[in-house]
Image (cartoon, rainbow, N blue to C red; front, side):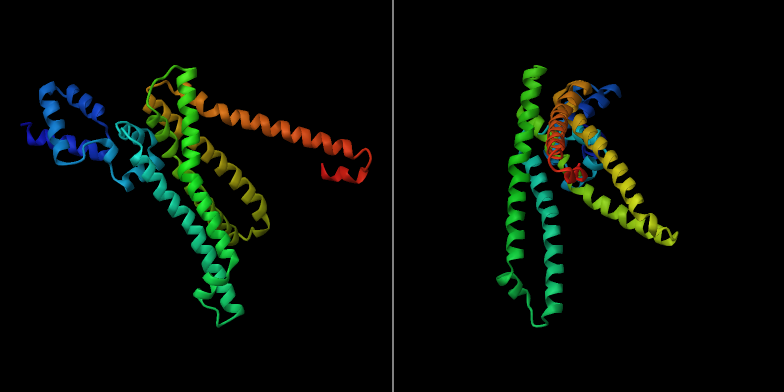
Length: 289
């Protein structure tokens, strides 16, 4: 039986977000024997979910947003897709449901003003707008839960296997992509809050006439910062979960984005040249370029 204080230390370390390998290494460096360490690990897992993949939902949420490195180290031992799949499913439902609820409330209030006898039942029965919003919600939900994560995780998996000869399970690629999706959901709300703050400050400083340029700058800076942080998060996940150098993970992450950028540029140049050719016969179209 391992000493109680050693078992308590292991439990506390796992709760903090360390994985089993990190705890084992810390105890070894502290001078504990392999026998005592394994007994402590075994006993701690016998009294709680010692696997780092079992850390709480809200703790996962906090770590993936502010401590990606610690987060991916803590979920490295997850052996199946169920934890990451459930995590993404729950947040997808939440962030797709919020706009739907807001839209329904706004639509209901506007309808009530126009017709005081209007009721929520009438809204649900007669409103094609609510129906279409529900259909769109369902499509987005299915796409964000099933199609998109597995498609891009498959790309990571194939790229790592064929280009860098990495033979880690598909689970690791899936986790590296699906957990950071939460950042994509959070970003629009962060932007909205920043805009509200900027508007309030501009109002106090009597600089409302500068609002448009401030919003453009704010959106560009925050968007760039978000993009860099998201790429960093996914790259960190691929690196830690697959035990590869960060530069290899970065190549895997950036390659499809580079292809999309080149494709977009080619389409833009092709459209622009087509419009330019049309202006030869219709000079008025030049203003469209």
